[in-house]
Amino acid sequence: MSVSKPGSDDFLVLRLEVQDFLIFEVGLLDDRKFEEWTDLFTDDGYYWAPATPDQDDPQSSVSLFFDDVPMMRTRFARLRHPRVHSQIPPSRTSHMVSNVTIDGHDATEGEFLIGARFQMLEYRPGHEQRTFGGRYEYQLLRRAAGDFQISAKKAVVLNCDSVHLPIAIPF
Amino acid sequence: MTEFGLIIETTNMNPYLNEHIQALVQPDRVHRDIYEDPALFDLEMERVFGRSWVFVGHESQVPKPGDFFCTRIGLQPVVMTRHSDGKVYVVYNRCAHRGVKVVNEECGNAGRFMCMYHGWTYDTNGDLDFVTQPEGYPDHEFDKVKHGMGRVAQWGSHHGFVFANLSSRAGGMKDWLGENADFLDDVAISAPAGEVEITGGVHRYLYHGNWKMQVENLIDMYHPAYSHESSSAKGGQQFTRRGGDKGGIQFFEKPGRVKSMDGLGTHALPNGHTWQGGLPPVENNSDDHREYVRLLEKKHGPEKTKDILIKKRHNVIFYPNMAMQELNPHIRVIRPLAVDRTEILIYPVKLKGAPEQMFRDQLINLNKTHSPTSLVQTDDVEAFARAQEGIQTSGNEWILLARKGPEERFNSGRIRTTGTSEEGMRNHHRAWLKYMCGET
Ligand code: FES
Ligand SMILES: [Fe+2]
Image 1 (cartoon, each protein chain N blue to C red):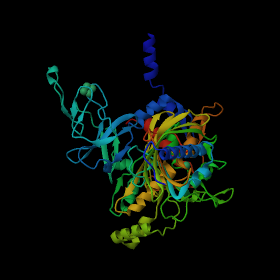
Image 2 (image 1 turned 45 degrees about the horizontal axis):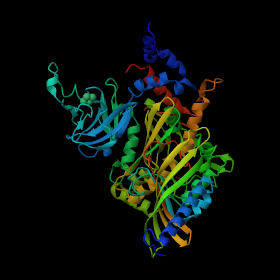
Image 3 (image 1 turned 90 degrees about the horizontal axis):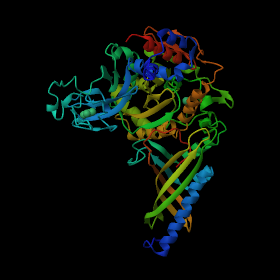
């Protein structure tokens, strides 16, 4: 489908579809359905959280997260391990996603560029609750109404370049 | 005595005589106070970080005149600069007027440094450039150096690795480095261009534990299978740590049976430096690795290249505040913040002249192993935080460091022993004692 002008019905429907999808996507993380979350990505999809707000790409410097699908599987298999000491007890998270914008699309590829803002509360019993927040940028493939795949998710955390205690759950 | 006086006395007076400190470090154990007493922490900042050579940075972080890089020695802010004379300087980050920290960005380039408070200006070697409204100081002669930001007592570099010493009475850098200098030579020669560069950003993470726990952990080959079991897959192997490698570190021989790391060996050197023997070589047939080997062979010939490719050491500790790993090259800086709080900074080390893809793989592997979200370090810092908590108990005031194996002594003063021996840690604490109770 093509995206019509902002304000048109098509546009509003699309934005709601996207918003519902994002709410579903971050909800999987909060529900610890990590494998289902991984399955939302295309085979060559990736998740990236830069280490500095102005980091141009994940290849020329280090990142907080830069996971392709195999890396996600390794990461989450570890979180399921009975002796993952740094996650005993595990972190709980609550993600909020809002300010969703449709920033562009490629009609031939069916790809949409999506922007959003997020907040993630994180609490691991025995530790202080932390608040992370910032900007999401997605590349989504739309396969059918309401049915998306993630080819890229980027989370630019406001204080990504600060010094952090361990972080286990993606933003 | 006034109450005010009392407060001054209790916070400023060092309650420790040398004999007290010596009693805390015994041949096979150390007292918990060295990890949890704020008064000892203050003394460490003065005596260990103030008397030992410490790692500051790498010259490639300040390539051009005017470049600066801010860091700390102990708790003291310093700036490493490249001055207009092309030389590197290590300068206290402090205004000579009323003490304001002058340089406030982590790194950058400046013609001069100007203090924000009253505008005094300094050259990039720390010399005083000018004082604003000088007519207000009719009785004062300003000296470029004496009224500059102040340079640290000594500094030097080896293959671009810059170390500094706050004490003018300490011996020279080369003596302090000892055989660790050979390691830096090995690192440099493993780059086809013959030198390395610090680039590719930095991983920073925090833990709620004493700084010495990280130093000890770097020479601890007893812990991996237990602490990092969750990072090993079926077959008892950890994921690979280098692009193109065919396998990772073997933790288990078979399910439930830990593979001993004794064979790697622990090396304890004078001045608290330590290293492990290199991990067993892993097959790598990737195009990038082959190209890398070809570049080395072109320069050094096949014999020498074979030798260069054998990693002789794993973690190499430059006691007290830096460690380097050659397998997936990076520097680790240990930055004490408080007695129970430490920041770790991980800087990728790029082998200049090697295929670009090798460095990209290196970064991705560092995300895996050494980021705040890593699958490895997070379990180490969990151990440090739990140790900091555990030693608060009153049943046992000692930390046991008694594990040992057969020892071999070399003329250089180096001791070689088994990989899981705690000799490396005992070595740290011997150096600690020397600095804490010594004269310089
Ligand atoms: S404190 Fe720096 S100019 Fe006054
Ligand atoms: Fe470890």
